[in-house]
Amino acid sequence: MENVSVLEANSQEIKVQRDSCGIYTVFRYDVSVSLLNEGVEEASGWLKMTLIDTSKEEGQGALDTQYVKVDVPAGSVSGNTYTVIFGSGLDRWGATTVKAETVIGNVPCAACNGSGKIPLNLLPFISSLKSYLNERSQEISPYNPPVYVDWDHYGFSNQ
Image (cartoon, rainbow, N blue to C red; front, side):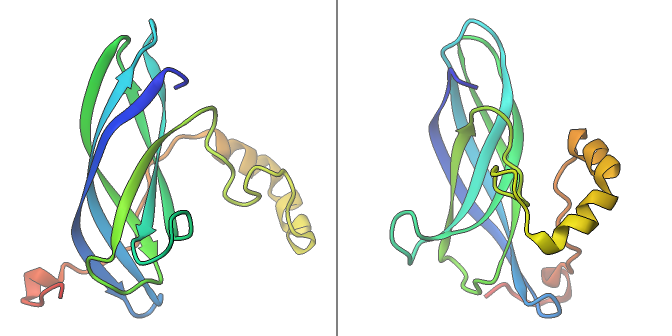
């Protein structure tokens, strides 16, 4: 993904679903992304999609991150639309946007943020599950959003 750059990224907020039991809000976005591969080989990697609170200062409003697997043919521009689902404590319709960027290398670990360190109270738990976690970390699986009810079907609006 070293030779791949994001030419254009447009996001459209499709649905906002409140989950009162989990005390969070589920945001569903359609993100249209155009990618340019200037390399001589097909690029396969990840796009990092970040949900941004637009009321915060630049660099301070990241709410949630999801990763999307992409393949870009050599020497071409590739466009695609991805449906991405985020979870956040923010409960405002229309106050968010999505930023897309390419990931160089592997997707960072969510538990240690790439540092390789974990809190001491997690050590016994992680140690007991080490082989299982190693297997699971090698698998590529899609993000499964929380279960939600389609309130529009029952006559309730999003706003």
